[in-house]
Length: 170
Image (cartoon, rainbow, N blue to C red):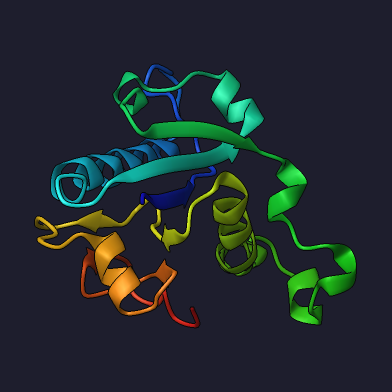
């Protein structure tokens, strides 16, 4: 069995754009480190497929050559799929900008990822952010570990270095 690793990346995927804003450059560097850490530190012990979801308009701008790896797939996500429907907004969200991004990413993790995994025939999901990376080799087969412990979704922060609070509430 294989592990599915869905990653939501809502920034540029191309490192070949001369006028790319600094936040996009930084986010792209984080994504590169995330993908490379999975390849170097996990895929020797665990069979996995990485799916990077991004806006179709960003994919059409180009994809960095280092993303052309075996078992790494780029898939489009609809712009409205990552926004909160107006009727679900909390009053404070109606009056501020950018506050819904982390909320929707959390909803995406808990609703879309399991449904996507099931639809694609995967049983086990590793939640991984585009700015998360593995610091050292994973010495166990995560699928076997999940099977033995009756887990189907993992977001275990002992394996990862990440910004504080990203996995809170999962």
